[in-house]
Length: 328
Image 1 (cartoon, rainbow, N blue to C red):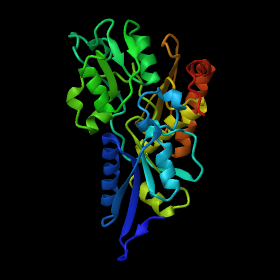
Image 2: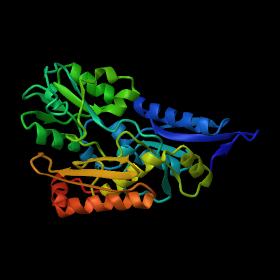
Image 3: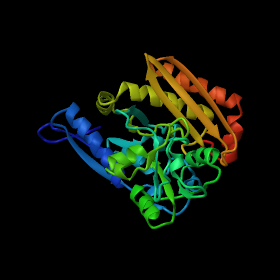
Image 4: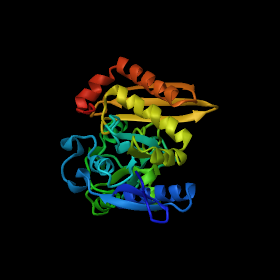
């Protein structure tokens, strides 16, 4: 339950990671709460996660899923905070007992961008932004999804893993460890680093991660007051789209870091979904597209299941298994 001051003022506590980007996201949600409920006091509770503490091991070596969310969720379950703010792309689709995903605010740009140390001039965008990277260049990204899709399109590139926050990855680029790095557009925008973007990648060539650009707001499932607050600041369009995306990922039994990409949107009152699954090397690729009337959350989730079933029929399970990306 949320706390109250002696004068009856409501205090809402937000659990968040302590990175600069995570704090931006938490402050953004705090402002949405204040606008929705004038007079509410919002406090931040900073939490260190396994993914923050261990910046050496690959994410899949740490279990792959939940490495940036478990401790934040536990703070809510323990009553240290009333809600948790997550980058939705990091939140596993397997629900935690006692918690509910109660809100998804308006979504930012969902795609990826490439930052290149020495861009190659090109008269035409022939590769959806990848043409700005020179032949044989070393490209840094820790995402198996990005790695597989880049290898599929540009097998000449040396795609290597990279860890660290946005600023750390840009520093590694500037120090010459990589010729290019691939990062989420939303993160660069939120950190006011969009001037570093060389090209925004065509989302039909490098499909975004499930939930990318969106925030997920979790709270205890027995806290109706907080559930109501989070529903009030949720965006229906973003909620439907991410429900469909997460339903697809759950049906595939793929983790957040599996080589799975997705696009979604609404056009003329219809919700559409485009999913893709690759093998780690990017040599095999299956995809599926479908749409439905944009309406209830149930319809969105059914769409996600339908797209996943088509992917599974095309052999997606074998590709996910090859990566070791099955949801735990």
